[in-house]
Amino acid sequence: MNDTLTEAQKKITDLFAGFDDLAEDSITFSMPFTRAGNLIIVRAKADTTEGNFILDTGCPGIVLNVTYFRDYPVTSNTNEEQTSITGSAGAAAKTEIKQFSLGKLTSQSVTADLNNLGNLENLKGIKIFGLVGISIFRKCELIIDYENNLLYIHRFGKKATDFYQDPSLKNTITYNTVPFEIKLDKIVIVSFIGDKKIRFMIDSGAETNLIDSRLPDKVFDNLEILKRVQLNGVGAKKVEAVYGNLTNLTVAGQPAGVMPFVVTNLEKTCLGDNSCIDGILGFDFLGLHKIGFNFVTNKMYIFK
Picture 1 (spheres, rainbow, N blue to C red):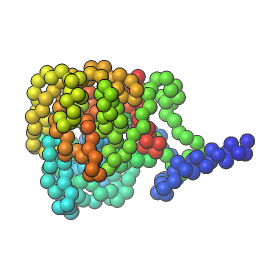
Picture 2 (tube, rainbow, N blue to C red; picture 1 turned 180 degrees about the horizontal axis):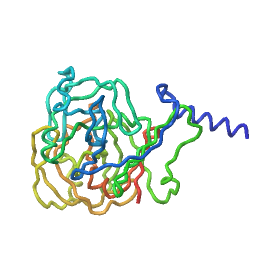
Picture 3 (cartoon, rainbow, N blue to C red; picture 1 turned 180 degrees about the vertical axis):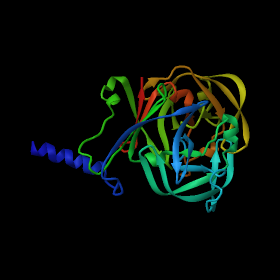
């Protein structure tokens, strides 16, 4: 019995190694979200400014709409550019906020990017104060329930005495698990189109699925082209792309069925370590499921 306890305690110690700044107590809560088209809109607060933020798992950190934070001091990094699927949005402008809050999650002394999100506001017809990326969840388990418009969030604390598990994860036959990597604060999983290995970024801020036009022709033998479309990025720039239905996609060992994809050049999404992603799984895939992420164990849950 004592050996069992010792081994369990060792696993817990290893799990939280390096997380010296974790809060003493864990936090568990749920919060509602609304939708603007296919985007998840949450209420969040940067210092004293509260409003609509987009939950964007394709975004590394916090992005603030300069329209509402124009009085904040700005530092620009000419060696770093803000990019999106439509290309570069110019030199990265950054600022500091004292506190950022999402529900019961609070981060202090946050470095945030500044960007003009007016194009998104015009498209969606609502005020958008910024984007919430995955850095705020790095010590958390996050479950997105698209059907009921709810987020379930658990932050692991230093005093955790066992491995927390959301009640919806207790029945393992109701979901599939796939490991993920965090590459430059982006969630990357490995899937397959036919027998071709594909690296997908998981992006709740993408309203559709995307695949890189530079992939081998063998991949596009599985694509039925339907039409041409225009893509909108964070900036005002638009690019033309091809839209169609893709078959033979397998995610977490399960066939995804016929799935809509936009074909475009994803060179601007490369991860900066001489590797690029091959595609992006956005709302067209994520919105069909309840999706979970454990950012401590690096596991993604795809509910059936």
